[in-house]
Image (cartoon, rainbow, N blue to C red; front, top):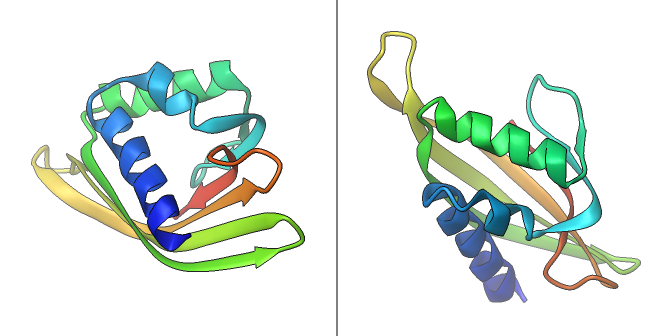
Length: 119
């Protein structure tokens, strides 16, 4: 199962990195809740499109995710790991950012992200 979720994360990253935001949004359940750091909770396709288009427009690219651990309980699989991305630094030069990553995948909607947060 970990390999399947890593494959999902790789596909998500590929969609983001190639600017295919509609493909990226397709990874989310219709009622998904996304918790970007320091921002309001995102729900719905329109909010996700606006957010991810904005991130790309700021120059962020080369997003990668590594799945480290899984927990399945009561029909929900939670995957945790690390993310990294390249983007503009305060000095104007590209730099790497990284942090923790978490997604929740409901058993009733395989392959769809219902919950996502990162720091």
